[in-house]
Image (cartoon, rainbow, N blue to C red):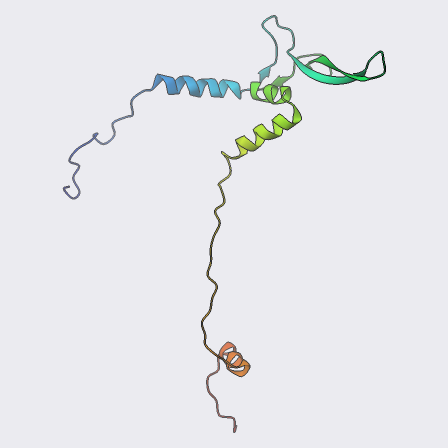
Amino acid sequence: MARGYKTGGRQKGTPNKDNPTKGILINHSSDYFTPREQVDIDGKPRTIQRIKWVNGVDGMPRRSVVDIDVVDADGKPLVMSDFEFDMMYLSAADRVSAELKILEFHTPRMKSQDINMEVNMGPRTIEDTLKALCGGGEEDEDE
């Protein structure tokens, strides 16, 4: 390879090729996370189905499916992203699982570190260690 000279490949400043599939995916993702009114095609507020336990005629608890409208206190459709709506639709356990999977993309994985903390100083007395810590060398004891 010639030093300092480009001998092959693309010329400097050449833009990347357009990829229509990538553009569609980016637009879809941004639409999915953009807040909007949560309404059906009819213009009615979207609903979430929840399981509710009720007492049956015989007194035994039974599961019942309840539709809950996604509205605010005034009865207007809530403004939220489709992602937030989908998260509301999940059960609590599934919601936690989804949040943990999403979190993996935002936090780095921790790697275990092996550190050798051995210090080979040879046999020393406490006096030698104290002198070394004080910064003093061999001094005359007569003074």
